Length: 316
Image 1 (tube, rainbow, N blue to C red):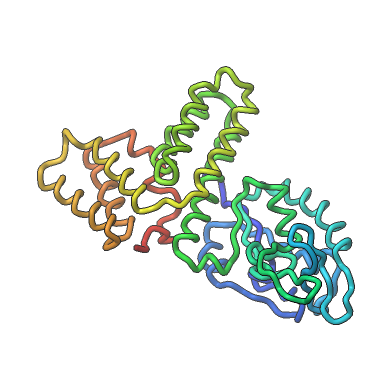
Image 2 (cartoon, rainbow, N blue to C red; image 1 turned 45 degrees about the horizontal axis):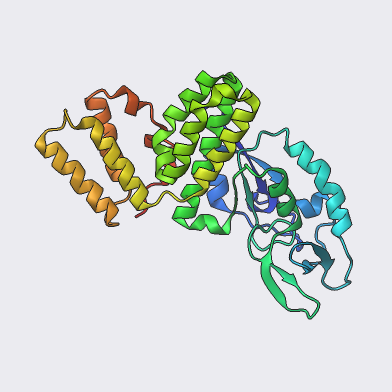
């Protein structure tokens, strides 16, 4: 890939002291682990829209579909102030070429999921989204987003980062040339990865590419990108990965010895049953790709969709 990947992040997660109480919520995993491979664009909606630090605590009130941002002690409505800042800030972010955004959980401005919205009786309804997070996802529906708290879950972490790295490869592909040939090359390299997430989407995308000459290139690429991100949003389950591994094995049916075939099948079955992480059969197949010189498989991003140092496939 061409250079580091840019992603947005709630500034307090990087250690910036911008929270309502003047503190931060530094997340070492972001700065120390992901920071080796990602360039962060910090954003704090509350301090950047003109609120002081420290400041009075706030919460969302009203309807889930259109909440207002209200200070808890003085009951000030800060919704308009936040919204005036949000539009221009999103335009600035549109120039950053972001491939993802990590938000602070539970925040009335940046929370992505289950943010409390208080009704007229003062009862919290955990079905909201922070004002800035809602505006960001509406403005950039194809950019992967996640909350820092959910990244603790290995499956959610892998799904999110796989989307981020794939979107970066897609953006790099766009920078080269907008042609049918470039799209075919990209689709070919991503075949197995797409199959691991959604065979249905992979087939639909293949049909789209095959009929691409009858479409305007811009429309073709935008439609493909939408399907790409839809596919990657679906979890790559053990069942789907097992199907991909068996598909890979088919490329070696004339080359494997009986012992090699037995070894591979045992590892695939152990993975399917949850006794081995995905990295084990994948690493074995990478060995055979080199040993038997399989150029097609060697070009598949499925074997290296993200840096191995992140250990995203090391969980059962």
